Amino acid sequence: MTEARVNTLLTEFFASKGQRPISRDTMPVREEEKPDLAFTDGRTTTYLKVFDKDDLQNRNTLLQAALSSVSYIPVANRVYLALPKVQAAILDAAILRERGLGLVVYDSKGVEEVLPASLFEHETTSTKTNVDLERLTSRISALERTVETLVSELSKIKSLRLEQLEVKRTRPESPTAFEPQKPERLPSFLQDNPWLDILSKRGREPDQFAG
Amino acid sequence: MSEAYKQRYTFGMDFGTSDFKFGPITSGERPEIIENRGYFTDKTSIIQQISGPVKEVIVGKDIPLYLEAREDLSTRLVYPMRNGIVEKDDERSWAVVRELTKFALESFRPPESEFTGFYLVASLSAVAPRYMYEKLFEIFREINSEFGSIESATIIPQPLSVAIAHKIPTCIVIESGHGNSQTCPISRYPIRDAVVAINRGGGDGNALTAEILKDCGYGDLVHEESFVRKVKENIGLVPSDLDAAIQLAKNDPERFKAVYRAPGTRITIDLAENSWMRFLIGEYVFDPNHELFQSYFSRGLRKPGDVRFGDTFFRGMLDFGDAIVEAVERCPVELQPYLYRQILLSGGNFAWNAPTELSDVAIDAASKTRFLLEEKGITDPTVLMAQSPQYSVWRGCIVYGYAVPVDFSWSWERFEGWMNF
Image 1: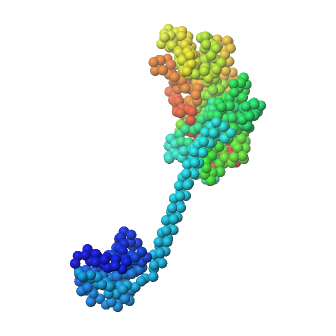
Image 2: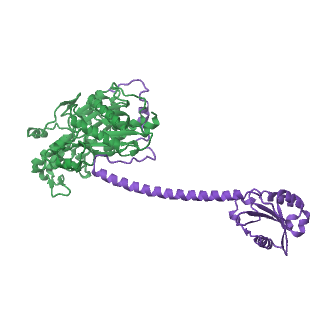
C-alpha cells in the first residue's frame, strides 16, 4: 500500500471522528519534530506517527519510532501510532497505554482504533496560547494605531515648525534657527593641522612669551 | 567638563569689520555670515507702537525689514567693529556686540539634554586693547547668566586664527580690512610686541576712488560708499611699477580702458583718457607715498594719519613692505628668515583683479607685496593669499577651541586659555 493511500485512509478515519488535518506549516514545533500526520477538532490536537512495513524491519526501529512519538505529548493532546494491521501483534499495547499513546492499525480495507490515546490536559495551554496570540494581535493593532497617530502628529508638528520658521524670518524677536549638521568626518581645516598638536599642549609646557 | 564634550560643542565667532561669522564645529567648512551691524529701533515710532514691543537692537538678516527711509538712518545703523576697535564707552556698539553674540548662540542651541553651554572662541583684531577683552568676557558672562549657553570662552587675535586655519605655525599675517591693517608675526604664539598697525584699509581706497570719480565727472555718484567700492573693485588695478604703468596707459588708453556698468541701472562709469588713474587706486592701498597722491591730499582727500586707538599706535603712511619689515625686525634675529618665508595676506582689501591681458603691468596683491619687499632688500620672500579669506578666521577659532585643553584657564598675562563661567 502506498504512503499516499495510507494517509488518505487515516485522514478519512479521523475525519469520521470530527478531526480535520492540520497543515505542517502551522505546527508549533521544529521541522524534525513534526508528526507524519496531525489533526484537530478545533479545540484539541492529535498527532500521528505512521509506520509502513519497511519501518518495522526490526524492533529497534519500532522502539525509536515509539520514543519519537512520545516527544509529541507536550505539544499534542492525543498521540497515536499508526501500524499496518499485520505488524500490530509484535507490539505490547500495555507499554503504549502506560505512556498514554494510542494505536491505530490499517490495511487495505480500512483503519481501526485498537487503543484510544489518552487526553493530555494541555487544552488550556493551547487555549492560553490562542488567547495570548489574540492579546498580542490586539496589542500590535493598538501599537499600529499609536504609530499612525504619532506619524500624523509628527507631520503636523513639522508643518507647524516650518510655519514658525517662516514667521521668525519676518519677526526678529527670536533668532532664526540654523540646523547644525553633524559632520560625518572632520572638516578639511582640522585634518592634518600641525596646530592641533601645538595647541593641545597649551598649559602643559613651560611659559613662553606670547609677546 | 571632558575634552569630548568641549570638542562636540566648540563654537567660533569672528567679529570682522564688515561681517560677523559664527557657528559651531558641526557647521562643517563654512560658518553662518551676517553683517556686523545692528539697527536701533525708534521706540517712539507709531508703527512700532502699533505692532507691539520690539527689541531695542535688531541684528541679522531681518534688519532690512526694520529700516525706515529716514535721515537719521545712519545714526541708527551701527557697525561696531568698523575699525576693528570699539571705544570703551561706546554703549551702542557694545549693545550690538551683545545682541550679535546672543543671536549666534541661540541660533545653534543644541537640543541634547547633556548640553550645558558652548566652548566659545571669539576672534578680535590683533590691535584690540585689553578693555575690549574685558568687556567681551563681561558680555559672555551676562549672556550665560541669562541663557546658560556658554560653558567657557576665550578670545584670540584674528591673525592667529588665520595662521591656524592655514596650518602654518610660523608666519607673518597681514590682515587688511575696511578701516585698518595689521601685520602680526606668529611663531606658535602671536608675537604681540611685534604687531605693526596701519591706519589704512579698504575705506581709504574707496575715498581715493571717489576723488577720481569726481575728477572724471561722476561727482554725483560718490555719496554712496557701497557704489564707490564696487567701482574700485571693478576698475582698480595694482601696478607692479606705478610710473611705468601710467606711462604705458597714457600712451595706449584704449588698451587700459576702464569701464564699469552698474548692474540693473543705466549707470556707466567710463574713465576714458583718464583710465591710467585706475592704477592709482591699487597703488594707494599698498603705498600712499607717491608724489601723485599729494595733489589729492591738497584737494581734500583725507591723508591717512598716525593715530592711537587704545594702546596701539596706527601709522598712516607706512607702506605694506615697510610694515612687514618693521614687524619682522621686532622679532628675534634667528626667527626672521622663517617669517619672510611665509607671509600670509588676509582680508578683503587684498582682493584685486589681475587681468591676464595686462599681466605686464597689473599684478595681484601677493606679487605687489613681494615687489615691495624686494625693493627693501628682502630676497626671495614667499607671499601667499589666504584661501577662503571670509571663513579662515572662524575656521581658526574652531581648531583653537577643539585643541586647547579644557583645564587651561584664562591668563591675563598670556592672553589665552579658557575663561570659565
